[in-house]
Amino acid sequence: MDDPGVLGTVDFALLNTWADRLLPVTQHAGRATLEIRARGFEVMPKNDHSPVTEADQIAESVIVAELERLRPSFPIVAEERMAAGRTPAFEGDDFWLVDALDGTKEFIKGGDDYTVNVALIWDGLPVLGIVHAPAHGETYLGVTDPRGAARRAEVWRNGVPEKICVRKRQGRVVVAGSKSHEVPELMDPFLAQYDVEKKIVIGSSLKFCLVASGVADLYPRFGPTCEWDIGAGHAVVRAAGGRVHTFDGADVRYKKPDFRNGRFLAEGPPVT
Image 1: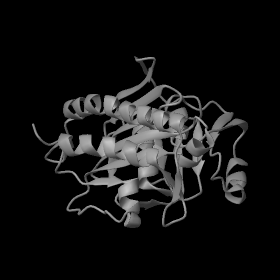
Image 2: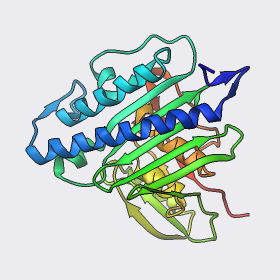
Image 3: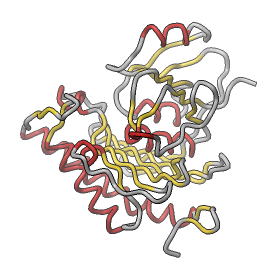
Image 4: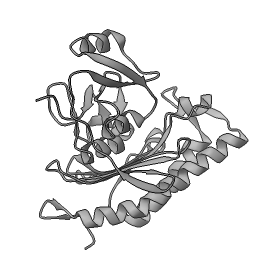
């Protein structure tokens, strides 16, 4: 079968095959970022004044090349391509999302909390996502069933996959928060409704992975993001049994104008 959809359904066997093809590619891209950081690099400004490095560009080229071989008919929305004005033509709602170095500021500072991200959006929702953290030596994978059941949700540590799942809240909550993109005037009132045990501050899409692996209960986001920032992490959370939704309860969907997201909450199941 050449396409994942048949009469609107998704072929999960094919998605798992694609995931197996993409896992080593994301890890290759991650190794490239480590090598570039070890030898030094130049920081360049983009049109929106955010920084970009050779590592962003090289990692993206590695991933995009494989996606073009894997499923050339699907559009590819990749951060650096988009910054260069290369917006793909669209006829449907199925496409690849790539953020080959999420957490560029962290990478520039020499920190470890940056990730390589690839997601497949199918009918407006992520059905496959890979989050690779090169400096941590971890790779998170999610292949999801749109009905909510996890078909595959694994994390690789030293090459060994372990099943992950969100945890059910039991009163006190652990919150995943951003290192550099908090909005305290919105975050503080939101968290006041919970009994917060602790807050884990971490960079990039690793916040989604904390929720997906049951380390954190909530990841509220009030600051701006683009779809490529969250697609892979969203897929991992969905595969692990959680949700990423707006504050009025609607699932975060993709192919929005300018590919920009509003406020959202990633979480496991609530207390019942």
